[in-house]
Image (cartoon, rainbow, N blue to C red; front, side, top):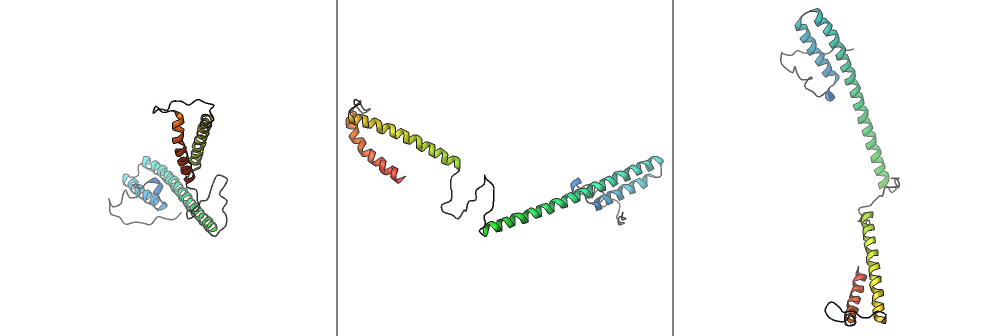
Length: 188
């Protein structure tokens, strides 16, 4: 193990520097600094046998802390490398997708070209809702048309309309609105 560099510090200057850091930010140099500070404090206490026993325990704790910091640094470096590899892979996939090759995204994925004027603009659920509403309205229209045919053929007697007119009179007016509805439907 390499000797920590001897620092010439005045008392009170940066005593808490390494100890003030978050445990996840510690480096091996910080562990050496902490060890140096603790050793200095122990030397100030004297050579009592209890201090000597405590010193050995502290040295062991500092060795474990150094090992943990080294392992954490290695894991952090591995994660950085993995992140960089994933970024490169994503960039490669983007370049492959831009150059015209198809990218296999899986069964539940869809690629949408935002520059395409014919791209989907609604979600599948919205389209399903609109389709269900259209089918419901279409079935209502068919029922009303059948009822109108029955009135026209004379199978059903004319009823009084809400305005006090007979349905026969109202049917003539409905013929115009029916044509208007057809043109509206064609426009839609």
